[in-house]
Length: 300
Image (cartoon, rainbow, N blue to C red; front, side, top):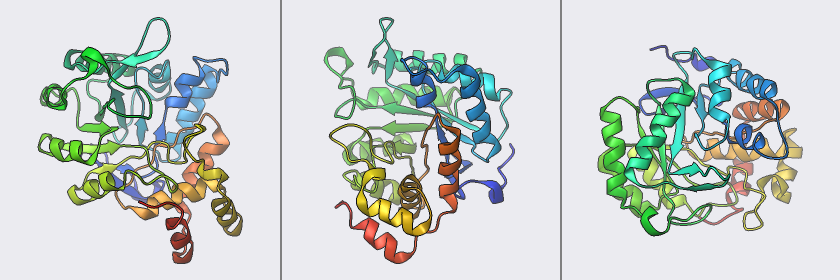
């Protein structure tokens, strides 16, 4: 299997399920969900931005079957896939025929979702499958028969890994206690909400660091939700960006890369200019004094 050229890997390289990947990857959520809403990106533009990412050295793409047509775009843009490309998908929810995304936590549902991802991406194995727990916000909350014991879910994913359907098991939306409990199953990565302004998941990150598990934060720049601060709008971040000749988004992403060596980024965008800026964030060096200022913006 071909390993990526380290010199051309945005942000340097990290490890994910035994594979070497660029620390700056690409999240495909916006490509799919935009094309299911009123703001439609268009197929040609979606294919172009995926190709732009890979040509720039990105070799870690994060997706999900419930992201609308995102998997179709990835297959159409990039197949036959380069050997070094790691495709990561997420399970734990599905899109209801009526439109909304709904929980799908039961083991047999997880298996069906893995098969759906394999089919739509056109691959025999997914590099990693992240299992999204729905115990707490943000997002969906599991109720009724969707409240499933994590051991039952891990057993199903372990069986899929043993069968060669997936290369590694990831977890998303988990607590430190849940991650600690899941460690014997062999966890490749954790995806939790985390940014320079929101470090409530620091105990989970500490556990990942201790056990060599990749940390893949979602909402790395916050979100538009009223309950979450937007990194790019924070006065200290904007002032630092101006002083460095960078964008606020680049400062937020560079902080994540500097704060923890095991962090892999999957910032997504449908804008080719923003994609180029995100990739360039991997070359942004934050002086110690600036790191101290950024570190002080949120308490762990």
